[in-house]
Length: 279
Ligand code: SF4
Image (cartoon, rainbow, N blue to C red):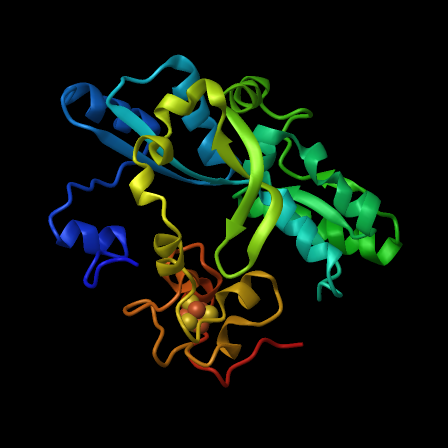
């Protein structure tokens, strides 16, 4: 059991005196480790394929002895596959993430059409691309002519980014992974492979990799984030939405990040539990 009062978040650890710095790129972790060769530096790398590819490149290119990686990398398509394999998903079309497709290639999303017979289009973070993808999936649905449309061709190329994929394959293994509030999804996470085990923070500091810490990071009581991210509930169907949970005092992860569903609804002007989207 974790001792009473132990920090349960990076924020709490920082407040308790731990030396924790937010960084914007893996290169900054490298620079910090190189600048302090006598200190152990742990780089907590969390994210999806797009974020993890540069971490893999860093490992392949070589990192100093005093730098280790605490990896929490996830693949996006297995979570979508889980969603589509369960009960009726509650939507008729899917817009796939263009930033992931720039790395992994658009082909990774063809299972949506081929196995689940749902219109799909890859879109990037531009108004034009999002509108094109929305138009494409509606047109596919109405015409009953399904295919995976690449609406972000400026950056998404067949096969993705070969060099990024090579580095991912060289440094990391794909493993079963726990998704907070959802559980284990097979083949949905990244772990350092045995050639890089000396740089794995979980191996270097095994005392910290205990189940109690994982339990401490579980979804807060009353938070419906897992239902929200799986599309089974709208954010304001959570009984904490706009009451106990707001951007100023977030309870769950969906209200913390700008990309979280609850935060997006809040920013879009839906401020209470009674408001609903038009049918
Ligand atoms: S982030 Fe807040 S509003 Fe969203 S599901 Fe969790 S508790 Fe509810």
